Length: 236
Image (cartoon, rainbow, N blue to C red; front, side, top):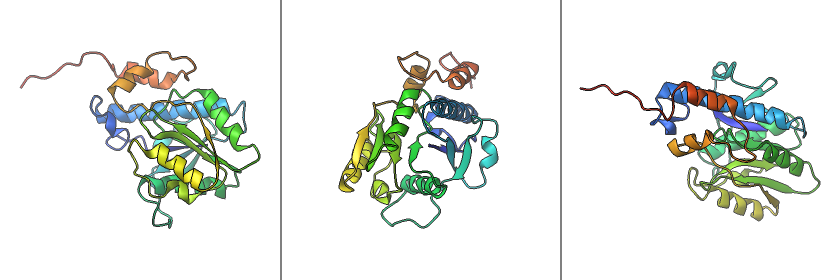
């Protein structure tokens, strides 16, 4: 189960959260997300056959993750640099690269998880893993509220799942569903969940929603940077 992640570096990670955050705050929050998501995966691994990993970019950015991940989390490069089918473009190259890297390690299934959902219920991760270990040919899709997906699980690195997708649009999950159907795969759909990518979703993290993972690192980071509190301005 690999989290698709950028190195938590100011100006590079979670830039969509600037504003309301400053680049250094966004980087700190990115690191907190990674801590919570990998700890959540480790918690799910107590109830299902799961190994946690970070599928990262850019190459050479490994040290930026030091101290920010759950114990036992692996690192694997997923920058989309290997040769790919021409119809797999943009972020799809990194996703396919991550899937290929996991299967190259002899895992029998792979889940790609986003780095924007630190409150994702642990039970959802367990359900995804268990579905992939059942006999048959299937994919597991976790649709996000914005039309993307927070999780995609597969039993082979199907390049067609990432072909001709308009990434960062509201049609990503549906297009992926169509790709899976074209491959003749059973589609297991998980409950919808939300990405944290704007001020409203940052506020939502601070609420206690039924079933949500507590995301203690994320909450502590938001409190530390004073999110939601008035900020002083300098007159000119």
